[in-house]
Length: 118
Image 1 (cartoon, one colour):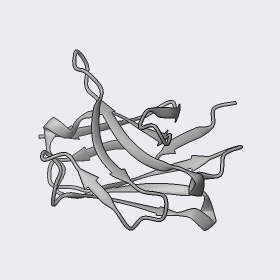
Image 2 (cartoon, one colour):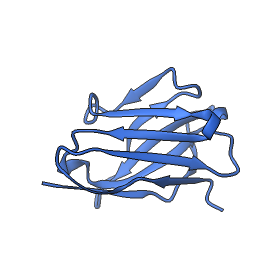
Image 3 (cartoon, one colour):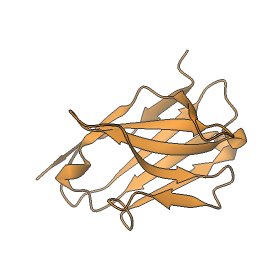
Image 4 (tube, one colour):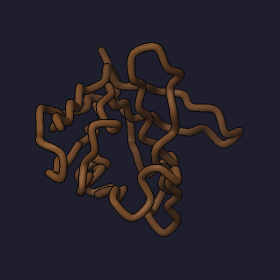
């Protein structure tokens, strides 16, 4: 059983918006900080945004700062990534993951494809 499941990806025109969700099964997400990653073909997986256990602290890659917003609802055991003003270079498979206390990412989802057309 995959512990994390991403949804909300799709095809959107440049300038559009998408909201990704990351739902947990068999995990209590409030026990973890979490992150959103993305990987485009031929590139390494990149950390896009992170959020601490209660949502009070968030960080973003420079490439998405001001356009993406990470949030979480621990009551729903779900994390979100609101993506606005999307650009073709945002095209990638997006993954969510939990972060352990030592900083490594422990549990991963299967990914959701985001494609931004110009």
